[in-house]
Every structure is written in structure tokens, then in C-alpha cells.
Length: 252
Image (cartoon, rainbow, N blue to C red; front, side, top):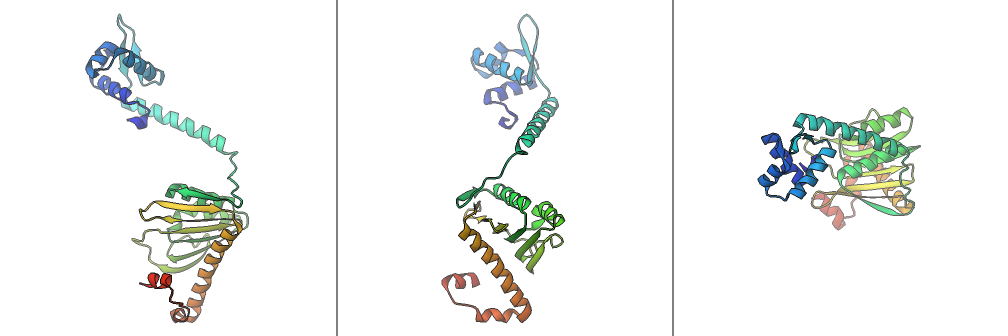
């Protein structure tokens, strides 16, 4: 119940009162074997938060809100907090990484940074990924409406061809686990990310000129090779191999 804003002691008090009805602080303390001063402090906190109420009597009795009432209150509190945060974040300016590198950890954090890069794009964006693009459809659709070019490369059927310039090998994406996303926005900032050996997504974002250039070149070269393959056939690749350890490992 900690997710509901209860401390461990408040959780115990809430469940006792929910099951047993009204009780005094003395009765509650006796049931859970905690000192009365601690019980009084917890009850005062619960009353202030609207979780419990005091029933006037010769000895003060306490009752708790029904779960549905408490949940409605928590929803209302959360929505108010979210509305406040939304107003505060309207004036938020994304960090200017300049030549610095920043590390990102966690898929959702990385995905939000990618969305932010797409939303802030002013001229042209490049993407290389093997994840379904439906998670970015709103942002890519907004770019399309602004006539901003979104160039996407993938080995897989990632979708969203109606809102981006898609270059794909069209491999079926069923049962495929996403393993990468690379993105360059306006030729000024780049991000690359993927899961580590334990499956945790980690990434790097930077405005470093060499970093941006390398990611941009990588995406362009993938597209060039795909266009050559489509024009001359798959056998063209037989003349391109340099038989490095990296290349041999990826061909196995």
C-alpha cells in the first residue's frame, strides 16, 4: 500500500479499522502492539490526508474512508498534481548538450528523449531502428504536417510509411525483439541506444559534431546499400566483404 501514500504503520492501522470498524487509539495500539504516541502520530497524519476521520466521543474514536472513496480522492490528487506539473513543464527548455555526452538509462526514458528530439526537429530527421514505429506515430505525423522530412531506415516492417520516408528490407517484425534506435535531428544532435547484455536499455545523446556525423553517415550508408541491393540484386554484397572478425561474427 505504500503506492497509495501509506507508511507501513498507517497501512496496518487502515486495515485494522477497515475490518474492525471504529476504534480508539488505545484499542488500535493493543491490536498491533505499537506505542500509543506512535499510533496518535500516525492517526493524525491519516486524518490530515483524508484517509481517516475522528468520531467525537468520551474517548476519541477513529474510522477510515472506504476504499472506493479513498481511491477517488487519490485519483483527484494525482490529476491535480499532473495538471500542475504540466503547467510547470510548458516552459521547460530541453537541455543543450553541446559537445557533451549524456547517458540515458531505461527504455521509457530513452523513448521520451527520442520523442522530444522529433517534436523539436525543425528541418530534417534521420532514424535507424528495428522497433515498431507506432510508438512514435504521433510525433512523426506532426512532422509530416509541418512538411519536415523524416528519413527512416530499418531491416524490418516497422510501419508509419504514410508519415515518413521509409527505406526497409521489409523483414517480418513478428517475434522480433527491438535492439536499436539511432536518431539525428537537424544535423545537430544525435542519440543511439539499445539493450545491454541484461536487456536494460541504455543510450547516449550528444551534440558532439563527430558523434552526429558518425550516426548520420551510418544511417545514410545503410540506405545506400539497400538502394544498391534493390537495383543490382543481393549478389552485390559478395563483392563488398572484407572478412573482418566483426563481419564474420555478424554473418554467422
